[in-house]
Amino acid sequence: MAGQNQSQCHYGEIMEFFYNNSSQKKDEWDSTQLILVQVVGSLFCCFILVSNAMVIAAVITNKRFHYPFYYLLANLAASDFLAGIAYVYLMFNTGPVSRLLTVKGYFIRQGLLDTSLSASLANLLVIALERYISVMNWKVHSNLTKRRVTLLIVLVWAISIFMGAVPSLGWHCICNLEDCSQLAPIFSRSYLIFWSVSNLIVFLVMVCIYMRIYMYVKKKTSVLNPHTSGSINRKRTPIKLIKTVMTVLGAFVICWTPGLVVLLLDGLHCEKCQVMLFKRWLLLLAVLNSVMNPCIYSYKDEEMWTTFKNLLRCIGNGTRRQRSSRANARPLSSAQDTGNSQPPSDETKSDEQGILKT
Image (cartoon, rainbow, N blue to C red; front, side):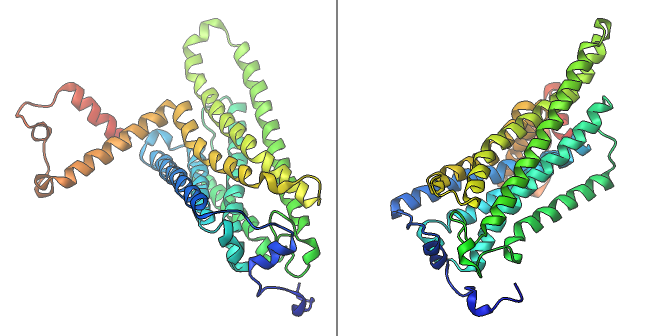
């Protein structure tokens, strides 16, 4: 890059120059379509941000989640949270607006998406390794210390940020227009090949890890003696966690594999593949993946769903107390909250204790 003549580079051009170079037709967006996409997309993104923030809050507040697996799961939710931010930025910089972006603005838009994808993929790989270690020792949770988990989380984000910044660091086609891809007009086709192949390989590795875990668990449970039924219930917990992660992984592979295949075809310069026809649908699949993950957590993990309900209950109670001038003056007892002088019932006490535990 440094040895090239800067006069052959096109850093000062807006993105329309590169879209025209890649023979991309102008997006036929009218104002109604654009507003509809932004409104619907904003609703999805709000759900992504709120639901994944709740997953992180649940892991922080519930002591039953203070284990390596759930710390990594919270980090996966953080990557989905970043994806929600990336989709918001993308929605308001798409259509005709995308052609008016500067090179720097386009790198930021794509860098956010690539970083969130890399973080999700790296988190899933680390979770797969954590599950492998714990299951092979037939334990609910691995023996990873908090320090090691913290280092893993930092490593995940360091790698993800680097992967998202690689094109802006020099692996682009701004100085070699003949190498530009069609889907990402300032990305080199060689980079798209590297990106898609490396991610597909990681997919394959994770699938192999979980197939190994599944076969081991199936073999282990089949040799348990009938009289150990009391301990089987205790050992079902790691199996439940495996099912949760396998469902998350399955959704991730289904939502992202088509996009990676199309990127690979674009990188290979497949002119007959008509990759532009799938662009919007593949982006919709990516958005759906970030929507699905919190739903999978709550559906597959009863404790997570219970924590969600308790968090919402606490938020609701806090909102009502803020609206009450009496609550702002002094703490209210349970009897005052209900408007009578009777002591709280045992059922009310148990509910309050359940909230406090989480």
